[in-house]
Length: 146
Length: 146
DNA sequence: CAGATTACATAGGGAACCTATGTATTGCGA
DNA sequence: TCGCAATACATAGGTTCCCTATGTAATCTG
Image (cartoon, rainbow over all chains, first blue to last red; front, side):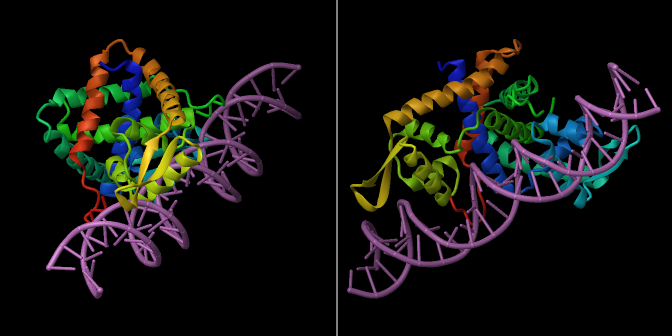
């Protein structure tokens, strides 16, 4: 039985491989994952989105611009704070999110179901593990540019 | 209970987030994952490495060059085929792999253990799910440039 | 032995992110 | 209330990762 540490390291390696494989298969802009954040949390500002997605603020600014150009999100000034924005998922964005989920879901689910050794609960466990590891908050750098 | 397809899509989103978070935390060259491949399978050629890692052959060529420059791998001509190479993990590479595993393992394992709801078996299940989904072979593109 | 295949290298470019820094607004203490 | 720190975001510039297209040399095949 491998140690927790070995397993954790493998988790990262496999995660990287999965991301690359799926991106290559489906050719989607990276920013689409922002759509799922907006779907989950409702309208948010740029910085909040960046923190939640664990990327830098400029990266999120660029991602949002892309999404806005495709009309998948709407960017409005925050009425309570003239510095801030409020990013909202549009109806088109919601449809796109459904499409992407279908696409990603198909590619992965197809492979997953080819493995009868794994149950749907196993998949749910895997997702929960990833989610919880992330939500605890992995430190970024010592500068802490959350 | 979410569907398999929804779970699959989430798996990809979380995987991407994990990779970014860990890379940012540890600042490692992407090529280090090749070390774990060599550790697992023994000496391999460039193309075999690329196929196993699900990246393109030029990408793997570059990664191997990086690793060779750091003396983490040795690149020798394949005695059975003058076209091919044999990439071997060096002792330094083995030490580096241990270091990286420790690093990745610490960052992830620390967060993981903060969640008493998950057992070590859960983590093992997550790793197995990722591995098996990958090893079945997600199609890359219709050109099939494996 | 000529043509197809295979293994790898090189060239060129695009996408995703990052740090550093600038600007405008807000909040706060003297 | 005034000046300064903090906050929210934009912009500039650059790095890393990864890909396609293509060239070269070696191997296989009819």
